[in-house]
Image 1 (spheres, helix red, strand yellow):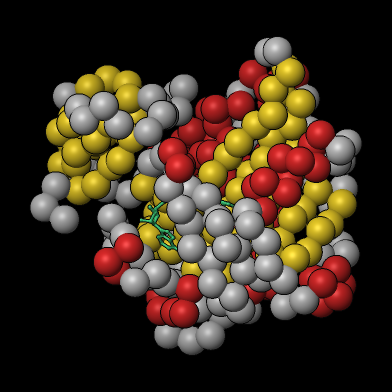
Image 2 (spheres, protein in one colour):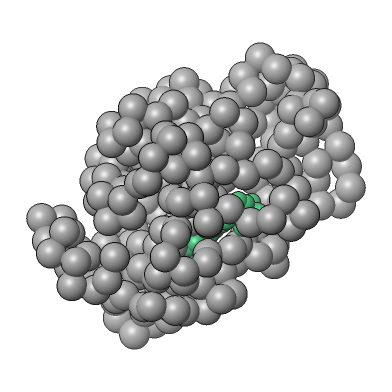
Length: 257
Ligand code: BT5
C-alpha cells in the first residue's frame, strides 16, 4: 500500500480529496483540521502507521506499520444528516460488516456502539467526531481502524477485550487496498439510508450478543446487567432491564468473559 497504488485503486470512487501518510499521529486529527481548511465532502485520509491513534474517551488505538488500515473519511453533512448525526457510528459499523461479508464472506458482528467482532474478538474500531459551529455540524469525521494482518493485533496485556485480525479469521493474508475499497463502497451505500428504519433493522440483524446476558458499564462506574434485546429506533441500546442506553462512554461485554 502506498499513495500511488491507493490513488489508482480508488479512482472509481467519488473522493472529494485524498491524503496519504506513511506515519501520522492520528488520521482523525488530520481530517478534523482539513474541515477547517475547507476539505470537500467524502475526502479521505489514510495512514500506513499511527503513532497516537485515538479511541474513545482518551483511550489509544494501535496502528503498527504495514499491517492495518487506519482511515478517516471527512463528510460535510446535509441538514438531514446533521439531524441524524448520532447514527453515523452505526453506519460505519454496518458498512464494515457489509464489506467483510461481500469481500471475504466473513461473518462479522457489531458490538454496540462502535466495535466490530469476528468470533467475539475485536477486529475493528470506530471513532466518529464532528466539528461544530454553534448547532451546525461543519463537518464530521468517520475514523475507522481495522486489524488486517496478525501483526496489527496489540499485545493482550494492552487490551480490555480480546482482539483478532482479518488474517486470523480467514487463515490467509488480506490485502489492505482491496479492503479499503470495499469499506468505502459500503459507506456510500449505507449513507443513503442513514437513520432510516431500514438501517436500524440491518443494525439489529448484525448485532453481537443478541438475546444474551450482558453488562454495560458506564464511565461513572454504574453497571447495568440484563439480556440484550436490540437497538431501538433511535439507535440506543435496549436491555430487558433498561429500555434505552444512549452512547457516551459505555462498555458492553457478555457476562462471563
Ligand atoms: C475504538 O475506541 O475502538 C475506536 C478506534 C478508532 C481507531 C481509528 S483508526 C483511524 C482513526 N484515527 C484515530 O486516531 N482513530 C480512528 P474504544 O472503543 O475506546 O477502544 C479503544 C480500546 O481498544 C483500547 O483501550 C484498547 O484496549 C483496544 N485497542 C487498541 N488498539 C487496538 C487494536 N489495534 N485492535 C483491537 N483493540 C485495540
